Image (tube, rainbow, N blue to C red; front, side, top):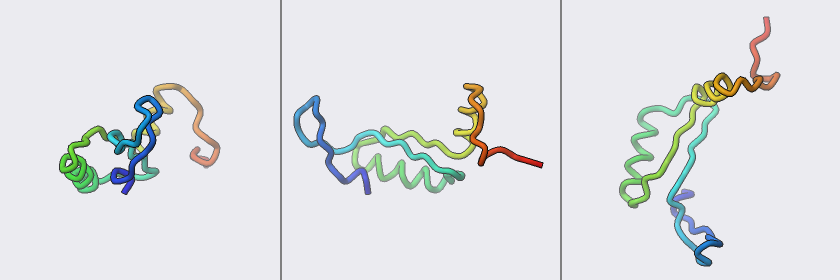
Length: 76
């Protein structure tokens, strides 16, 4: 739905359609969901999309050595 809405671009001083999207999910983004979104973006000639699922987010924490929030830590 977000791809069909115009936003104001202050650099161009006019309203434009969104051409980049970040899809971030707390769970897994399935292959079917990625394919469906990709097809929708290709049909509208706007194909800049980045997917971030749970594993991608956790890898960012591991790479940057940033501590996980307390709610995300495993406790035994």
